[in-house]
Length: 257
Image 1 (tube, one colour):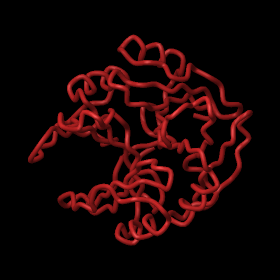
Image 2: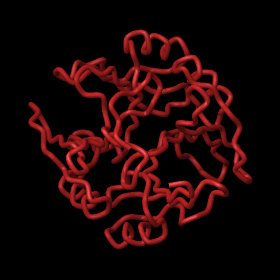
Image 3: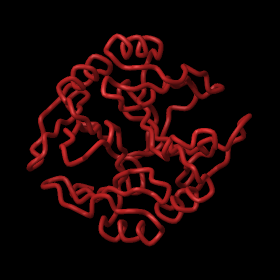
Image 4: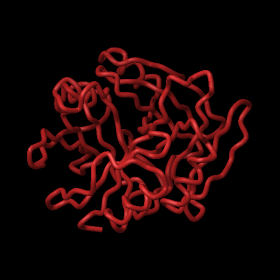
C-alpha cells in the first residue's frame, strides 16, 4: 500500500544499525529484493532501503568505537511536536539518548527509550514522511514491544501517543494490541522468564509471501532462525530471524493479504 502521510503515533520508518554495512546490504537485497541507495554524510556510511523507487527504511554502519552496541533494527514513530513528545517521555520515566536533530529538509529525529529501556525513535516530518509503502509483500506491516511490565508500559505509551489498547487472544501469551481510532497498528507481548536477560525491545514485522520458504532462504543466506515458522490463529504464520550480524526482525505471511 502506498503511503502519502502518517498520523501521529504510527510507525513510519525503520532503521538498521549494522557492524557490516556491505554484508547487510547484500543480505537484505537477496532476501527482500530491496535496493540500497547510498547517501552522502559527513562521517560514516548511510544508505536508504528502497523497493521499486519507494523508500522503506535506512541503514548505517555502526562506528568501530561502538563495538559494544549490537547490530539492531530501530522503529520510528511519527509525531507532530517532537519537543513536546520528548518532554512527555522524560516525565513518564523514559530517556532521551540522541537529538533532537534536524535532518536537512527531511525532518527532525530523536532516539529515546521507555521506562523499561526499550529504544525507539521519533520523527517529525518536513519533506520526508518516512516509508512510502507498508502492508504489502516485503514491507513493514507491524511493530511489537516485548517487555516485562506491560501495564507500566501501557500507561507510558498511551500518554505519549494517541493509542488505546485491546487485549488480544493469542493462546498462552499475554498480548495487547496498540490501536489508533480503533485500528490496530502494533502489539505488546509480556516477556517470560525463559527469555533470560534479553532487554525490552521493539521489533519490526515484514510481510512475506511464504513464511517457511522465506525463513529457509534467510538461513541459507547466513541468518539464524530464533523462532521457527509458527501459526498465529486467525492472523497468519510468522518467524523471528536474526540476520548474519545479529539484528532481529520478524516476517509474517498474513491470512488476509
